[in-house]
Amino acid sequence: MSEDLCTQFSTPAPADTHRTATGSLSIILLSRGGAYTAGLTELSDLATRLETAMVAAGKPVQQITPAYVDRAQPTLTEALEQCAHAQTIVILPVMVPDEPSLRRWLHKLIMRWRAARDTSHPAPHLVFGQPLPLQPGLTELLTRAVDEALRQPAVPEVMADESWEHDPKGWSLVPEHQHHVLWCVGPRCAAKGALQLWPTLTRAIRETPGLKNRIQPLQTGCQYPCNHGPLMIVYPDGVWYGPMDAETIAPVLTRHVQDGQVDEARHVHGPRCLQRS
Ligand code: FES
Image (cartoon, rainbow, N blue to C red; front, side, top):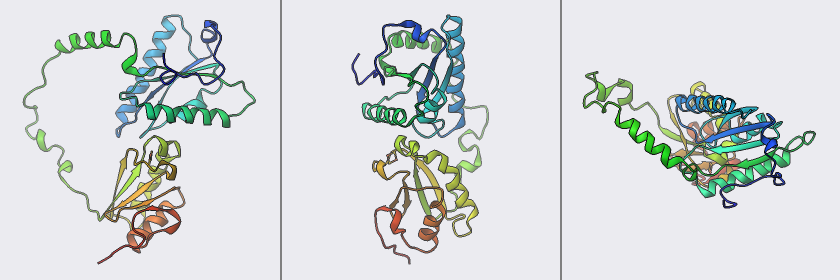
């Protein structure tokens, strides 16, 4: 197995299977977040099923927790914190694609977490599982899934509901707005608190008179200048701001949208003067 694919983050464990058989094993199921809460339930359910299967197989596990590299919580750092007292933590990616550049960055995040942790407890032995597509047995599993799918009824040609193409009606309406605010929830901005700040952004838009009905907020993946994250981009002006925090979101947006001025302190890229007709 290459170092890139499965990395150990502490002194390599001795060939000692008791290390993981004493009940001090924690597992983090790592995935990419989705925009909808159903995705969170799926990963939690998978964690529960895995725990049941491991216990039934006589492999005690302290806890199995989901974690997300973007767009959802808990983040990997939060999950590591939950598992911090385990003797061994296995991080198991259950996502496709599993990009090498993201993995390298996650390795750095883990090392940063370990360097900052409370040293009154021994450091857990940390290992990263192989990318999901390289897991032995996956093709056999998918072959069985195809067989199972072939036993399922076909997707109906017409849904029972007559209005299926326009249902619900709200999906046909464009909400009132003048600006799009792109809010990065890519992995690096998420690690810097972008997910926790999203409710602050939406509340600011909802509750600030000069912003209400003028901004359509939108979560995005990585926009690349991650070192400036949490990153916010305001269109149509194309002004990039960062790093944003709970105190600056409302004032920066009010200044931009209501007063037509760019906040110099948070300006990262784009025009510094706004044209207003
Ligand atoms: S993760 Fe936000 S800019 Fe890269």
